[in-house]
Length: 121
Image (cartoon, rainbow, N blue to C red; front, side, top):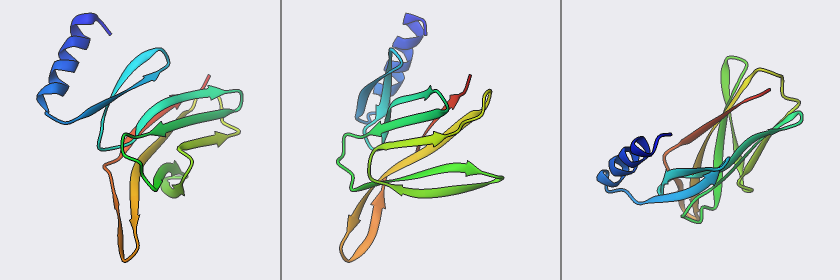
């Protein structure tokens, strides 16, 4: 991204008056809203695609969604990492993640969703 474009993006984000966190991903600065998970890494390693995510807030768990045969699957995740195994070449692997806090006598409260994709080689 060109310096002027990066400055404009940063200025636009500041104008939203939301707190943002920073994460380094593939040598880039990744600005993330502080109210949702932030992807720290998303990459292919051999026949796997690996996503790593965190957040400023210490969530109890994450919900992870990903496409499956024309539908969508959601799983609970406590590790902050999600891996697709036996990936196919020239394919796009996408996940959406939200951070959640559980409550003893009430439903969990969750953040908005964050999404990231990796295109395999």
